[in-house]
Length: 86
Image (spheres, rainbow, N blue to C red):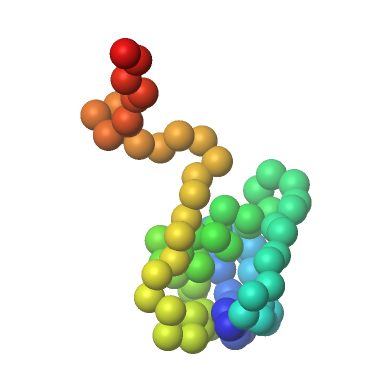
């Protein structure tokens, strides 16, 4: 189970989350949709621990492994694995 408890997150005067509460049950999938700048990436970054909420708690229920997949390629060229053709 993943719980968001009284989450607050702002960037200057822009408030993305204010007193946000949500619970995702084990085995459930959630789709995050919205316009650009609404806070989708910030939300995922907080789940992954890349960013912290200004206030509130994210309870991962003891889970220490969180996967995060970026929409665009983010690996440096030296880390890319290219297929080898015979």
